[in-house]
Length: 496
Image (cartoon, rainbow, N blue to C red; front, side, top):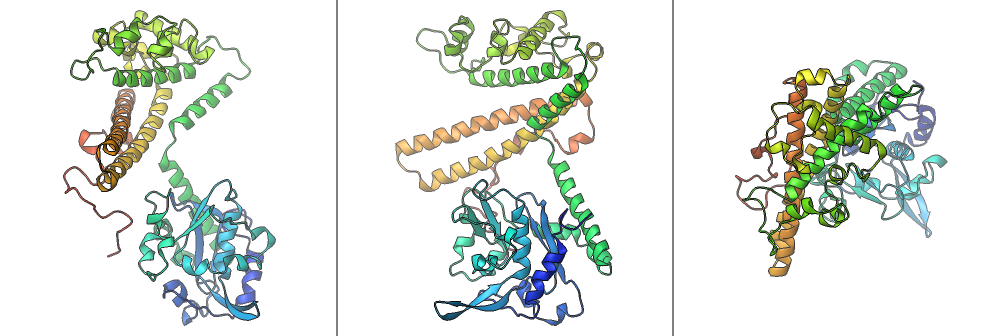
């Protein structure tokens, strides 16, 4: 692979740039880190390269394009003097890291479109005179870093090694929007690649670069695969596959297999939400209004013209498939076929309760609900389509469930610390209750997808990634069995 086409930056211009500062020495005004201590010592003598610097995505650990290059004397700071108001001022020039970091930023959207949080072990040193240093770099690396759109941080485990004075501005604990990111992912990445050091130590520059390129590419690919596809990505993939399969040919049926599966899965989600909002059991149902008729009865008894007011946003597709209120013509055709199968092919295991004449209880007869004999008579590939879609649902619902559990912890902690008096307490309790409803909904969605996946493919290796979700698994980081109080968060951990 040609230089600058992958993860390594363009080598010729980079080496010409650092030659200008080959004999300069470094200083530190904050603390003594290994990145600076080993710069001017004997450790670099006799070596063409003393290490590699790498720019990564701090949240997921992906190596960035044009974000890797060699270090000749560590992560160097070199001293220059420049005139400012007729006085000589120290001008620290981090020739290696400046070039590498700005090369990685050059390939990203501008900060005005996508705000950045840049982190570095010695950010307090690197940030000093950064804009002045950029003036000596190639023109394409003189990137605009607007104030407010770019924030600067020190990784959490490295912050304790700095002076306390003036360093709160670099703490990720006080930055909005970074969540629990500790920005130490680069260390985890190097720990996985340390094995390449022995094999690349005596290689020539070309072979060494190609070998490291392969390892970085494998690292990114493995991370991407392990993340799994989202439900939206799987829906788009199924639609594209169907379009390619049917291009240039005439379909035999108005309803395509993909539109049928997607519509029925959407209806399943609407049924689940409707049953949550309008529970049918006496213990869960709210007390009926003065006229003796609850929301559920009012919704079912409503005429088509009144249905939008009685049941806003709920089960429109099921209630009005024949009146043309479904989202698209393909969905309307799929709904008619789906509702017809209730009468034509009801399997024996469906209970009488599920066959009640109410939309939220009507069985949808997705592939995982059909007997094997009935499934064989269906269009080939239906079960595989649903299985792939269930993978996306499992991934999405589990990720969102974790997010809302974190939100639950934050809401409860905020209420305990800051909320007083009746009205603010009521509002805080409402927010917590709304979040709990979302947690329950996501929990049910995950369990429904897990049961469907199990019915489709049976027990297997997929259960290592998607385990059965128990009630004891759905808990916050603090846990129900721990003493209530302010525990040690990710932002307060220290290395042993």
